[in-house]
Image 1 (cartoon, one colour):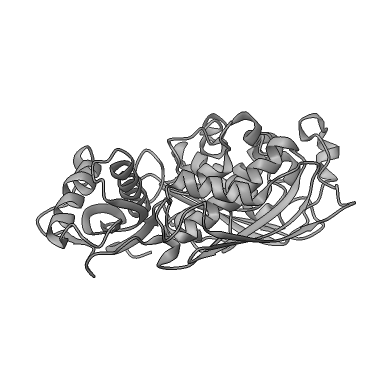
Image 2 (cartoon, one colour):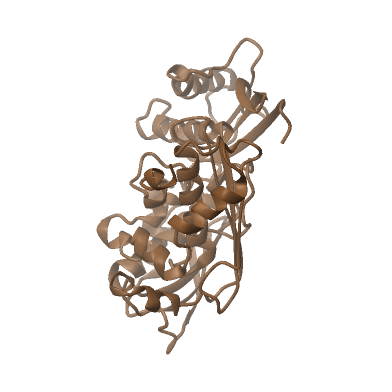
Length: 395
């Protein structure tokens, strides 16, 4: 990566149609796992004007009302306009119940190492994990600030600081780097939707957004907008209503903001809507866990970890570490330490993170909370792959 450059990342709020789909898909996963932690479930969702489409394949002892889950999620997100709401939107489902495929029915917490070794992955997948020392989240600054702005849009709406906001909003932050370190805020873009045609006027909206959203986010930050920072607030003018009545959505279409804001590579597969037996989901979590511990230990200022899995094999067929020249020891030695202290086998990841039992421990679900504002770098949730509990082993 160049020493001096500008990098931008984007985020969206919980009411963006793509994120609404991610949340519905993960709320379905939560409902299955809360009743039956050994459920095998993949759920995908699409939304458009006044319609929600859910496609799912599952093998489970649980009983889940898909339409009710979707309607509850629409209410939770905050859509209650005549254009789109939980009561009047049509919900269409295409469901396939699979039987006699209960290869998921094992208790990972009681397995021996030999038994873990016998549980092979069912999917071929490439995943990446990344961490850097740009802030306490050990995440790239552009995506951190983009998510913070998106959260502040939600806060301003929920707390009626800006009472005319709808749940749909977008943010983008550009950070200027010098010598590979964040140097200044290059640009900020915030796009919000309002709930009526009658106002406010665009100048009032821009003033409200700047005062209630942009200023609070950067007040406590060491990196702040300066006189030359480009600030765009609804540059195309007012956006009325927004959400599914304005643009369609689909599960898994925002993978870069789910991970590292495109600053580091991603495997490309959707994270949401999949039970924890899917390696494309949990492998990405395990890779982040290892990369974060490498950076937290001081072994490198940046770390990208690559894992590749093949169907029928238990362990990754490839593990590669790249510290972009910031490692205090060679990358090959860091990779050896990672192999020694982190277990990337499917059942081992389930056991390490307790992934199949987390939804039952959270009344309002676990995975649906990850479906907006990122799966990585979360400081507002107790997310197991964000722990730095193996730093002492790496040091």
